[in-house]
Every structure is written in structure tokens, then in C-alpha cells.
Length: 254
Image (cartoon, rainbow, N blue to C red; front, side, top):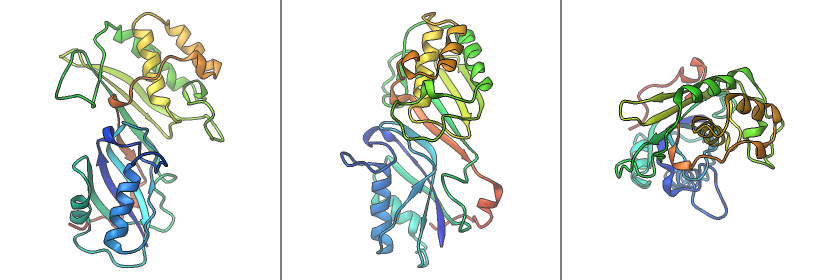
């Protein structure tokens, strides 16, 4: 039977979601815990990969097992993982429900703090420089008019297409002066959000015009875009699925 896990993690001390040969990943930590509890090898498939140092306020992953789950599964998982990984729910889904391919959207936020803040260390990018938020939003709105985002993808990435459907992309400036970038799409390329943020910050500083930002997208060349923003400011905050995926969801095991 196939199950979905709902979880969250602070990615500071992990080499991303996906298993890596040279460092600990969130996937490895959870697979080890699940395999220990269920006493059989368990493989997890996540809704997507987050890079080293990137966080997730909501992540889903699926796994399969033929045995019944213990009532204490979630409590046991949380007891076997560090404080920076939390499992919230586990529920059965249909055999064709897939954590990655059934997802209809992914929603990310990028946090920028304007001054040094010890309580947001590793959770926001400290960027004290002046920016024009209106111009940054003007440039961000152009993302919705394009579908090919090769200019914001890591080079030599193994994908069949660079096409993405962006639902929204905008900046919010808070009373403190801190900034949050919101972006949602059906899929994201590797390094895409951080490359977009870094390039939009260049627009906000006046180092790029809005027209030049548009030309960067059209160029389909990563070398034309700006430097990727640091990983610590980025969080995956929500993933969308059809309602049918949650048909058998209850309160989940404790």
C-alpha cells in the first residue's frame, strides 16, 4: 500500500532533500528511521528536491509497504530524528498517487532581513542594501508572461524541458523593511528560485533594468542572469495536490 508523509525541516545542516554520496540528507534520515520502525527497507519519493541549506515548511513524500503501520509511527519518527526534522502526518493514498508527479504546484518564499538578526540566522538572507521594490515587482510580473526559464536553471541539468507555468511572483515589503519574495509554479528547475531572486535584487539595485531582466529570460542562457541568492533565505512552503489525494486522510497515526 502507498502512503504519503507530510513533513517539514530546517535545511541548514542537510545536503538537501535527496540522498547524496558526500553528505547527510533529509531523505536519508527519514528512510533510515522508517526502515528501522517497519523492519524492512523503505524508499521515499519526495515532491521535489530542495538544495543544500534550503528549508521546507511543507514537504510531502510517498513510500510503499505491505504491512500495517504502527499507531505510534509519527511519534516514533519524530523521536528518531533531530529537532530540525518534523513529521506531521501519514495517510494512505491511491496506487497512482505520486508525491512528485501528482503535485499541481509548488510554492516557495524567499526571506530577506535588512539588518543582522540573531533569531533569523540561517533562515533569512541578510541584505542591508537599498532596493526599489516597485521596480523589482515590475520585473517579477514578467515571469508570468514566459514559460522557458533556462536562464535561471543550473547548467548541465538533466531535464527534458525548461518550461514552467508560473502562477504568481511578487515581493512584499514589511513594516520592518524586511522583504519576502513569493513564487508559485507547477514545477521549478534546479536553482531556479535563487537565480531569479539574485537577478531581481540586481534590478532593485539599479544594476539591471526591467527590460534587461526580460531580455535575460529571452536569452535562455544562465550566464546572462545574476548570481544565485544564498540558500538560507529559501523555503518550500506549500505543495498542491488534487483533493482526491486526501480522500483517506484522517488525523493520522500519533
